[in-house]
Image (cartoon, rainbow, N blue to C red):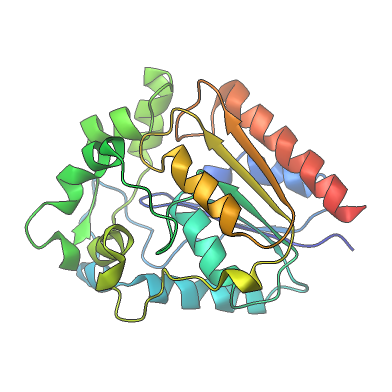
Length: 256
């Protein structure tokens, strides 16, 4: 039996991130799960659950560990952006078959300061009391830092599908010392399974330096790729097709 796959979406995102990739992976014979993180069911236009603002990285991690424990076998964990960070946090706690980290966000020990990240996230992080409220990113910041290189119509549609997220999680990811449970700190000695890491060279929010630092920390065999002319959002057009092919080829080697 081929290992199941658990796909983890990023900040402000939903399982819709994997709407086209998941069926492609299922066609290879892998059962695929794409859970939504807690309270990720209200679009930007709706009022968010007030309790969402207090949700922590540890809350997300425990939710995902429970998802893994319900799976029939140790999964390959695929994570994009914040999902890439959560994939590492979860994989350090559970048996897993491998990791696929797409534009991974930083853990406590892989952060790389970058002006592009500050420009993208500053308007969200610097809002007064954002660390205890539900938060969202505005269009201008998202267009510049998340959807750079993506055609306007596609970027608008993707932005329209975003949801609210936890200000506490954003603060913990930005300033790891705020996490009372050190949830973004990963025991990399436990990440000794094969891994595939993919990042766009023009990523402006989870800059390539984070992916490089992550690849150096992982203890298993690492297949690392930086895609020229590609930003943070990997799920459109030829970029998505190429990334899907890279994952499929890596999975075939993992299964052999």
